[in-house]
Image (cartoon, rainbow, N blue to C red; front, top):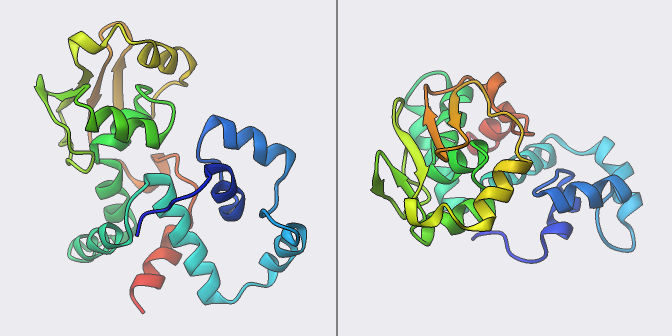
Length: 202
């Protein structure tokens, strides 16, 4: 089941920003939502190993906005590769919506998924409207020519930071080239990935 409900509450419950807006909210209220939020924040220091694993799994899912079934499938694929930490992150990071986000063509993973679904994104010049499409090294992701005049893409690029080293961006052309499958330490995701692997390997 996919996460639903207000993004600010979800971000506070997980303790991670999911958008620029939730980042500002977390700065003001860095504890879970609800009447006992501050008490829950203190209890996190005494979490059981299982609860720590569960929290990290939820954090990873939220940052990529994927279903539980999808995450389990990514875990199974990663388990066949050997280095599970790097493999799991590479499978998630090569998703088309993740490349759109990291390349600065969208401000949030939710917006990135919507842009892909609505047909605004191409891969090597061909329209792809499947957010989970796996981008291969050397492929170029770009905003469709007719969509480049939309304010949402220009504002996202203006507000974006430089992309991570495994992406090469051309702001003027609104393109992002996926150079290689990145190691975990190059991916800007907030998560203890080994705990996620422990959760699914139970």
